[in-house]
Amino acid sequence: MASKGSEGGLGIDPMHQFVIERIIPLEFAGIDVSFTNSSLFMVIAVILITLFTTVTMSGRAMVPGRWQSLAELSYEFIANMIRDNVGTEGQRYFPFIFTLFMFVLFCNLLGMIPYSFTVTSHIIVTFALAIVIFIGVTIIGFVTHGIKFLKFFVPSGIPVALMPLLVVIEVISYLTRPISLSVRLFANMMAGHTMLKVFAGFVVGLGAIGGWAPLAFMVAFTGLEVLIAFLQAYVFAILTCIYLNDALHMH
Amino acid sequence: MADTSTGELHSEVGHGDDHGSSGMPQLNAADWAPQIVWLTITFVFLYVMMARIALPRIATVLEERRDKIANDLDKAADLKKETDAAIEAYEAALAEARAKATAIAADNRTKLNQEIEQMRSDMEAELSAKASEAEKQISAAKSAALGNVRGVAIDVTEQIVQQLIGDDVGEAALAQSVDTELNR
Image (cartoon, rainbow over all chains, first blue to last red; front, side, top):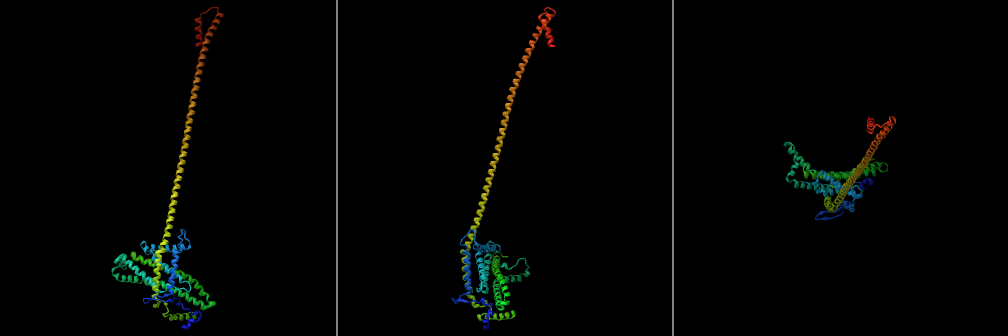
């Protein structure tokens, strides 16, 4: 099996791009805290976002240039998203939603660069984000409504006989939120990148005679993947807003 | 050709075993800890950067712009109001001036008419006075002339009677018969 890996162009492993490589192996208090390729791209994303939101605004121009417009646009995009989905009470969580959206977006987009690493293609990263959101939203719900937040699981206007069944369904659907939220992003990223790699393998395998067909597909699919990178960041942020709205306003 | 390549790729997926995972590196639990740790570090850092520096800065810029636009619009509205007031004042002044002009014109017209009327009536009075005086003179002259006619008539009658009869008839009888003839 290992020998096949060196069989020319077809020796491409579509899953190899997701392998975590320890650039600087580190250990702290018995925990592996190695600086990996994933960490590297997280750091790059953070630096790029910071530059994107600060350097572009350094001019503080009354009439914005291209980059300043872009930074203002993303600010207002998230601000409007929160205003529409959560309302004025949601403004407190604006920095978090903005950070979340920009982080996911930049990680997704950085992943589109060949030979780069896609941070969000790892379930553990998306799940960590989702579980933090889930726990945070649940705490906000209980802090805002106290024990009345449990009414969230009791649908109104339903026959009493159906109540036990529906409460169970509501609780399960609530508990699966972090899973659906994290798997949606992770699966989209992994599937897209795997697909690109597989078709890249076809291009090499079919050579100059038949390789143009998968190549053309790849070009189109790369465009779609960029769209998905945006869309999934948007979906991640807007679902967070919707969960937050549920916690603040209960249905 | 496609069949062979997919077949080979299938075997390649199994190749992932070399990395110590069952095909999906995402499920390699040994890699989870560093990812969570670095995700926490980078995300918290990014959150602090956004919440403390970047977002307030963007917010101030947007707010300043909104204020400036609002101020400019207010200023424009004020200026428009001023312009309207100025136009109104100008029109009021114009109307006043026009009214004054017509008043002056009407005043002058009536004054002139009065003067003309006055002069005409004065002239008429003068003329009628002169006419009546002249009439008086004429009637005086006429009566004087008529008085002379009686004397002459008496004289002529006396002469004629003397010539015809050769006798004096008497002054009184002559005057009486002349008067009778004249008054007939």
